[in-house]
Length: 154
Image (cartoon, rainbow, N blue to C red; front, side, top):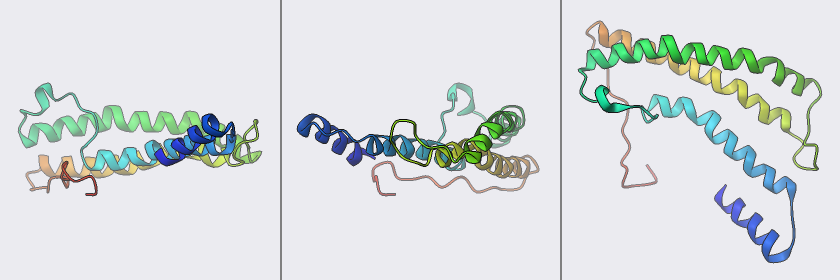
């Protein structure tokens, strides 16, 4: 994505060549990165969290917070996103929507990520609920895999 952005800038300002499809491909990649990566980020427990109190909680209290957050925030939000976007995406697929300005002819595929996001988050929410339930029941649950922040390839 970064290399594509550099290419767009070099082509536009170095050679006076603009390419809408190339610019839109960056938007597609950016959207895919966030929409498809959100559930994975949650699975690794790397999502944004206000840790003022949470970091000092016991594993059981953390599990309770995670359980309540999943039930009261994550699942309702996922259902709302899916419900609100379903017709929008369906209409895009019905007309096989393309870019209006000569860009990529796959707008309907990009909009499908609006349904992939809540679907993947819901699957991860189920995993979170199971993990929190097991912790609250006293079963030892392995911690999410931590990556080495010093090595960008892990």
